[in-house]
Length: 94
Image (cartoon, rainbow, N blue to C red; front, side, top):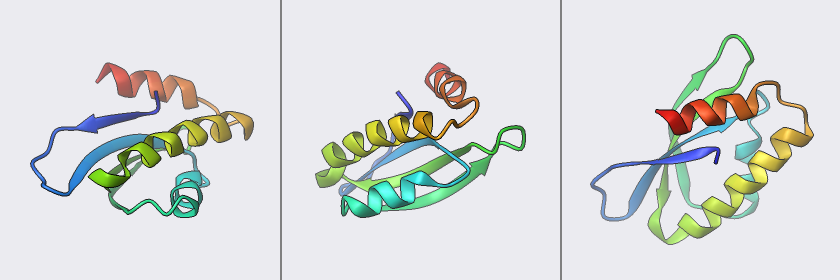
């Protein structure tokens, strides 16, 4: 998995952290699916350009968000994002 849920206490949103590419593919994918979400923080890995993004997602859009994360993973692998799977493994080990 390229995302992980972060514990929070919001009535309307859940917080996630996920791996994205240097091209920020998630912006296009999330926008095209009309998912109500807002990026809170973006961390960039200087070695490979990959990013960790912390995002608030409306609870009613969680299923669409998880589908979008699967599409993001497939798109990242197709575009040849170096180190993407390694970064996903590190995220899950946190």
